[in-house]
Image (cartoon, rainbow, N blue to C red; front, side):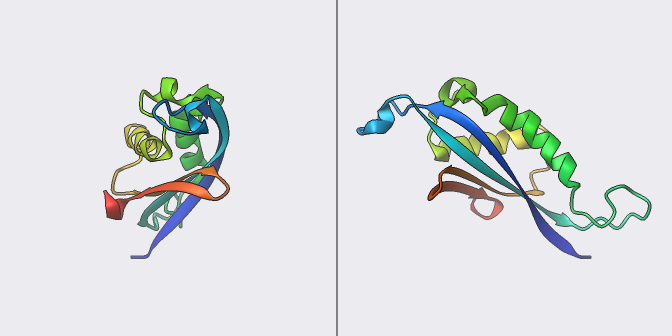
Length: 129
């Protein structure tokens, strides 16, 4: 059976502050975040099914991520919205947990990348969990 990884990219705007940081990040500030969500599975081969030939329908993945994550974080203060210390590292774990709760099987959720800036991201994947 063939397998593949598919990835969908999302963007959201949020603010946060890192109260223990010794620099400017201790002050409330915002970022234009980019979130990459990758899933890995067998390519479905059920003839006549809407998702035939797919790992997962991109629109289904989009719906889950927008509802479980983006709606919770977009134009919000991240510490208040998530209840975690809002570094990219903690946020990526929070996002992973939300996607599992929302119904993406843990063996299918493959990798997340949360870009805080154009040159800085946190990554979480199955092989490091």
